[in-house]
Image 1: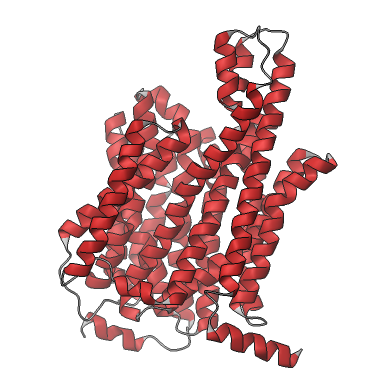
Image 2 (image 1 turned 45 degrees about the vertical axis):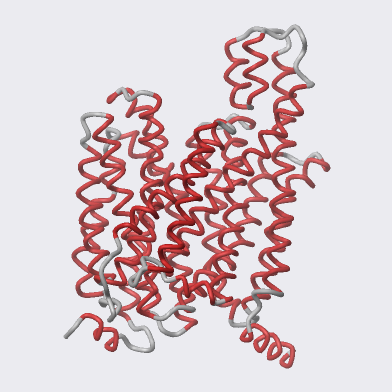
Amino acid sequence: MSEHHQEAVVPETAGMRQWLGLGVLALATLLLALDFSVLHLALPHVVADLQPSSTQQLWILDIYGFMLAGFLVTMGTLGDRIGRKRLLMIGAALFGLCSIAAAYSVSAEMLIITRALLGMAGATLMPSTLSLIGNMFRKPKQRGIAIAVWLSCFSAGGAIGPLIGGLMLQWFWWGSVFLLGVPVMLVLLLTAPFLLPEFRSPQAGKLDLPSVVISLVAVLSVIYALKEIASYGIQPFPIAMLILGIGSGYIFIRRQQLVQEPLLNLTFFRNRTFNGALIGLLISVFALGGFVLFFAQYLQLVEGLTPLKAGLWMIPYALANIVGAMMTPSLANRMSASKLIALGLALASFGFLFYNIAVWLSLPGLAVMVSGSILIMLGLSPLMVLSTDRVVASVPPEQTGSASSLSEMSSEMGMALGIAILGTVGTATYRRLIAGAIPENTPAEMAEAVGDSLAGAVAATESFTDPSYPYLMEAAREAFSAGIQVVGVVSAVLLIGLIILNQTVFRTKSDESQDNEADARG
């Protein structure tokens, strides 16, 4: 039986085999998310053992995410052409082998290379898991539940990463954090042939290699530039990389219009529902990226928590995402998707403004930040689940791999943009306010550190015994708090704008009919 005819054997209503298959896919997704965060705690141990330079340390942390983002579009399209299960199994085998190599790296260079290969393998897994879910679960209600489970596992992996990393490092050496992936990928390789069906496009053509290279240059350049700007401000080299990335993106789009077998099917973007889903994911994750950046800093720099304790305080917001995601399919049966998304975004907007309100009312900061994070994640969950479902459902079954990669890319770009732009907004607010609060007799080195960031203020005041230390730290925390408030207002305004778009431009006929039915029942 040819691979593309195997799609016919998948039942219209998902049975035990499909739900067990979802469990395997969800486990792999959890591991991918965990790999994003688990290394941060291990880095000091890596530095002590392999002695990487400061530049190499940054690449050890960042290269995984860069390569994953860069190869998403390519791997999503490749899965449509060679088969999603086949690509998933190739990626799982590569991920397992590279995890072992990373665990036993003997140099910084070897660890960077293995992390890069892990990112490439991760790029095969992400769109493959989502597109297979779209093919395995035909009924909208079942597909919604499956996507909610998939998203919940991604959230859980990111949240428990620091916790699991801390526990592993307490008992084992730093390489043990990478070995977590080996049994998971082994389970996937052993069960996938029996639980997962194969799907690929019946018109599978050759992969356009020039498009692959151009897309890599475009994505990697933009994400690298945004990360550098977020970390070090506007500098000539990151700006040049940003221009290179945007230019390469334009060339890539032009090439897709001209070649016979494009890497990316641009006709997807003629679908209003598809566009609305991608824009919704981009804007919501943009706002979330800025919040998570300042939330993590607040816990450690303002509240003075250790990275492990800060990670524990971030678990409630991840749990809120899981609860919100799992409740979404049930709520979507009672109201239209657009109304549910709008209500969720309104709740998330309130969550972004919650810290501002609390500051005015002089409420305890830690409880407020954690409560706000819960409201934000509960509110954003319906959009994330329903928009992901809309992306998968709005394209032909043979092209869900390519569409899924665009969904992932929207989230990746949204996170990078949010950290870069909202991070810059918050930092600029801090610097403007702290500049007028530093006494003239403050040592120049200390004044420069305090004026740069709250992290700089904490580090500088620890090494100085200046009598202005308590005053400076209080002023720095207040300036940082003001930065969070400004970012919260910007994020809330963006989500309100998204509500308006969602209720007008991207509102579908099914939304209108579902609302009319609900009104008739009510």
